Amino acid sequence: SWPVLSLWGAVWRHPRARALLSASGAKCPAAFDPVWDLRRVFADVRGAQLPGGRWPILSMPPSALPASPSSGSRGRRPDHGAPREAWASAIAVAPRGSGSLVAQVADVQAWIDAVRVLHASVRRFEAPDQRRPFLLAVDHTLPDEHAATFRSDGIELVFAEPLIVPERLAQCGSVQRRAEGLRFRLFGLTDYDRILYLDADAIVLAPLDHVFRVPKGVFLSATVNGTRWLYGKGIGLQSSWPAPGAQASRVGAASRATLGPPMINTGVMLISPAADFEAAVDEVIRVEDWDLEGGWVACRELPAGSPLGTARRVCATHGVFAAFCTQGLVDAVVLARSRRLGDAVWDRTTGEFLGCRPPLQLQPGTGVQHPARQQQPARGLAEEPKVLGATSLMAGRAADVGLVAPRPGEDHCTLDESYNLQVTRPHLGWHLPFLQRLAGDERSSVHVAHWPGRPKPWKLAPGQRTVFERHWWSTHADLCIAGPLRS
Image 1 (tube, rainbow, N blue to C red):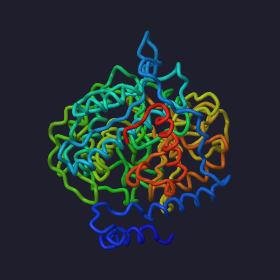
Image 2: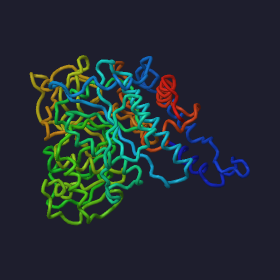
Image 3: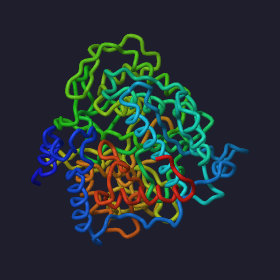
Image 4: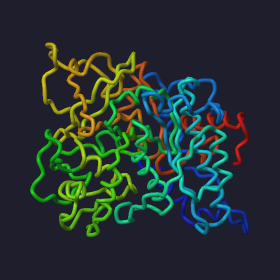
C-alpha cells in the first residue's frame, strides 16, 4: 500500500536525476528506469500470491506464424449465407512534422510491429482452415512499404477517412484521435455481421472463437474495470436502475449517491455493424455547447435537432466522459441506443452463448456490485449455481441460471475482466480480486492482455518484463523467424 512506484517515479523523472546518468553531451536520456523494474517485481510477487502461485494464463501454442496472403484470411468470407465475421484493429501514422524524424519513425515502426504481433496472437488459436479475415482500418497516409508489410502477413487493409472527434469530447492527442476515429468506420461495415475489434496494444492469450456466437445485432464490450468505474447515476433506459430526473445533473465515476451501469472499455468490442451508428455519433458531435468538469462533459441545454434522438438522450442522461479519448463517446452512444446488461456467459464445454447476466447494481455503502434480481431462477432452482463471478464458460441454459437473452438492437452486454486484463499500473492492481477468483478455477484463464497507457511491451528491456510482456515478445520472436522485422 506504500506508494513506492509513485515516489520513485517522481524522483527519477526529475530533469536533474536524468542528467546524472547521461553521458556528457549526450542527447538521449538513460535507458535504465527503476520504475519498470519495480513494476516487474510487483507483478511477480502478486502472481505468486494467486491460487496455484501463478497468473491464470494458458501455455502458448508452439507457433504464431502468420498466414500467407493467399490463404490466411479466407476462412470466413461472406459466402452462401455463411456467418460474415472478422477480426479488426486500427492504426494511424503520425503526420510528418510531429516530433523529431527519428522519434517519429521509431514510434510508427513500433505500432506496425504491435499490429503484427496482435494478428499473430489471434492466429495462434485458429485452425488454418477456419480463419476469419483480419481487417486493419488505416487512413490514406499509410506508406506503401507498411501496407506491403501488413499484406504479407495476410492482413486486409480497410482505407477510410477517420471520423475526427472534437477535442472537447475526446481529450487526447490528434494522432490518437485519428486512430480511434478509424474505429468508428468499422461500425459501418455492414458486409459483416460481427467484427471483433482489438486495440493494437493488446495480445490474445486464449481462444476467442466463442465470442462470435453471440446473436447478430448484440454489441459486446469490455469494461473499464469491473466495479471501479461506474456511471454515477441511473439511466432511464435501465429499468432496474433508478430513473433519472427530468434534467440530468453532471455525473462522474466517483459519485456513488445513486446507482449506475459500468463504463465500457473500447479496447475489446464485438461490433454488429449498423448503417445508422455513425450518424448517431455524428449527431452527438454536432452538439457544440458543453460544460467540462473532471473529465466529464455535459450539455448546457438539450439539443433541439436530434433526428435519431441519440444526442438528446445523451444530453438528458449521462453526458460524455471525455478523459479517455473517444472511448466515452462510444460508451455514451451505445448506452443511449440500447440497454446495458451484465457480463455475457458461454457454455464452458461447447462455447454456446447462453445469455447475459442481469444489469449490475452497486450495493450501497460497499463498493460491490451484484446482479439485480429481476426474476427467480427457472425450474425450481433455489439459488444461482456457484460460478467464478462472470468469468467461467458456464454449462446450462439462460433460464436455468437467471440469465437474460439480449434482444438484438435493444440490449448490449459487457465482457468480464478476463477479456481485457489491463496489465499496466494501476490497472493490474484493480484486477487482483477478479484474478483471485479466476486463478481458483483450473479451466479458466485470461483471454486478452491489454497495455493502456504506459509502458508499452515494446518499451521494456528483458529484465523489466512481466509474464505478459514475455508472451508479447515470444510472439514477436515467432514473427522474426517467419520474416525479419524492420525494428
